[in-house]
Image (tube, rainbow, N blue to C red; front, side):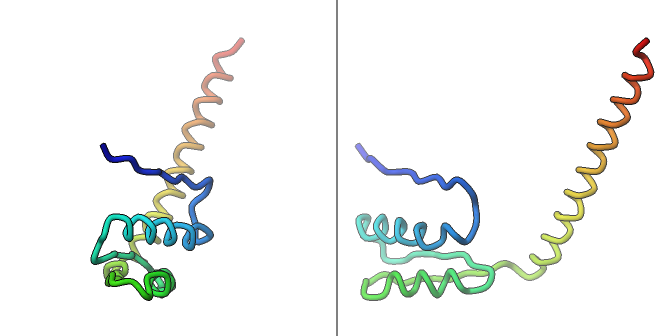
Length: 103
């Protein structure tokens, strides 16, 4: 039987990076892994991971976003804003229709 701990953070964000790397380090060492892959947008997480795994035999592979990711994030952000506006408009229309029907 395999037993593992699962960690959940209250919020997402870089404030969780160091603890996440430490948990990953402990798990990788206990599993005897040879490689660890770290995703990073700016490279800062990759540097922190490399420092955390220094002195082990593990190789740290750092990957970044694909080309065009910044534009994709902007597009998603604008679409989310548009969707929020549409949902608000639907809610307002629904509320107005209900109010118009109410005697």
